[in-house]
Length: 373
Ligand SMILES: *Cc1c(COP(=O)(O)O)cnc(C)c1O
Image (cartoon, rainbow, N blue to C red):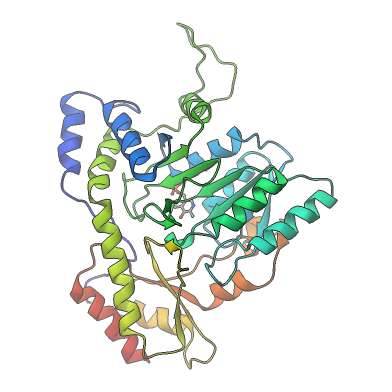
């Protein structure tokens, strides 16, 4: 059996162990400490957002974001359907209902037209949505100018799920910095990792301060343990933040490598017109976290043929996210739009995209695809 090629595996830079050693040497083995502070500062500097709270996961960050904008039992939250389940699960944690929105072909992300249609219809039903969650899928920025304008017009807070989009920009501005709140993920498969972690980003200091309070069991100021809110244990370990500090140093090269993977695939497969890659608009810059494509109907092979051919060579490739409105767990949730995200799901595949793929790996992948074609 040939060695396994993973979809997206962790890629350490080198200084992570130095910072972990520092954490051990100073005995900061807690969910707070100087490495957490330094990691938060690095995230602010990089994204241009004023405040950041390092947390235990991207999912935890989204959960706190919903709490902070006031989402509660019986509320409705508009959420991109074409995404990972973690984008919508926190809506359910709050006892609220997700309302799913279709994607547009231009970015594969939330369709502004379907978003506005949904808002108008919910308002007609006397239900004003409490928040909008937009996702930058595979690192590709959504059309933020249009989406922000709609959210402002109707006075609905925008939350950006930028879990996959650290390092991507739209009109020169970092993803995660557009919404009232933004979230990042540092899970093992993301562009950088803390072995598990996330962050909440925002320009309003009061919100990020409150997120830290909620994330550390909501302790009121008192010498004893005093509580007037339900709290969570959501903060990032100082040891994990040490990994994050090392990873931030290599983030620019990780983006370069992921984009280089994408351009290699695009060049090597341009002879096959039935392969279409995820488009990038002129004012967008994607970190190309995952290289994603769709196989057109004109092809004699299907997405599944392609995936299985790669699997037979011990190469991991994965279908695009299954839209959440088609997931059994969300089958009751309302949905606005047409069949765009369902069509992309049916025909789409993510190719191995790690920044640690060798040229030999990449050649093996495209050779397998060319042999199939
Ligand atoms: C990874 C991911 C999350 C969740 O992040 P975790 O850190 O794994 O909790 C949320 N949304 C999207 C789009 C993701 O890809």
